[in-house]
Image 1: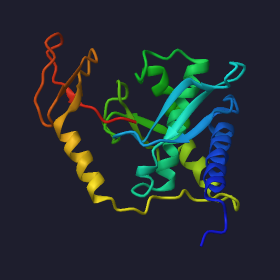
Image 2: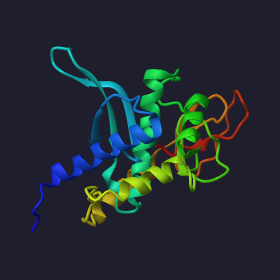
Image 3: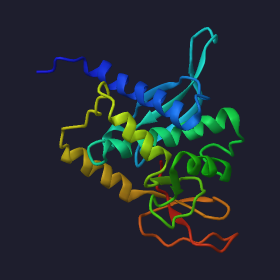
Image 4: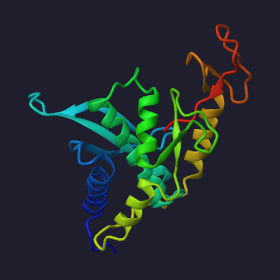
Length: 216
């Protein structure tokens, strides 16, 4: 039996985290945005500048989406690091110079370092810091790690809900779909190509091997 409203509890936690990180990591620069929960294949989350607004056009707001399908397999610290990751995109959208849609450039990477997240296309140490798709890992003892620890210690902060369903058929269908087509990207010119998993592709222009995408 649930005594609290799950919707209110979930979005209260996300709003609290957004406001807390905005204050601790971005100096309160960021305007409020619409935080949503969206299932996007292979992605922990995404940012979409100016995606939503009122019907009369008087209000326009950005979207930050988090993928709840990954909450169970990640800690809250990791899941909310994706929120901070997307907040870095929001910061760049309003105060920096973003590249073409979806590209993680050097300015964004520098902001990630500043807030205590290390950009990496693999999500692990040693990965390239820029590219069309780029993840990150949390810098131990860095600004984000300290901010999250402070947030989690707040008596009114609630942990994220996680999915309890074990939908084997859905996973099987997703795996079958993924097996039929994977996007590959050239690390130099960002050329895209689609092929089966484990296909060896080389960019004809740059003569570099293409890598399978890992989105964030």
